[in-house]
Image (cartoon, rainbow, N blue to C red; front, side, top):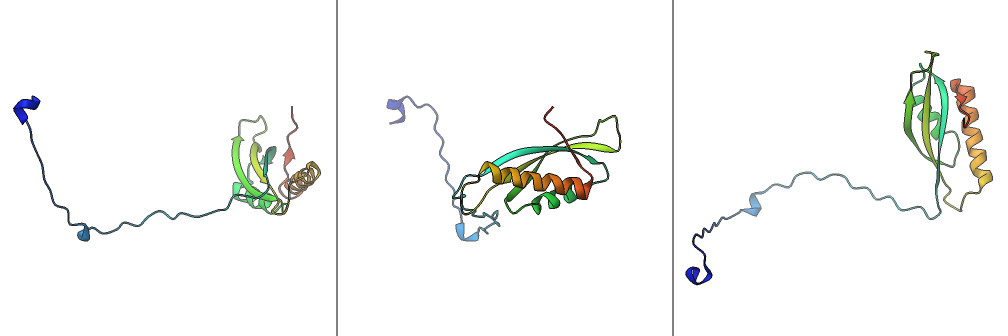
Length: 130
């Protein structure tokens, strides 16, 4: 049969695997998070803050700054300012409601509350859209 098929060399391998002897390895933890029923909105917020202020303080203040805040993510930081006592920080905020779609007024209200908290409690200066 090999000659008819033109096969000059052929090798075969056979092995036996004892599956019962294998031990399962711990798996990653998968977590289920349902998709939101209503659309979320995200926007970036940039501000100057004193260099002594820690990221954890910024994140916890913003996350607790308004009930519509679902997520706070660090985007960027710039420390090359001529004023060495401040740095520029950019965050991405995700806002949403569980019971309806956000209006632009609700988004503005949440943004203003967060900006006010950053200014009052951390000495931040909100960057304008220059």
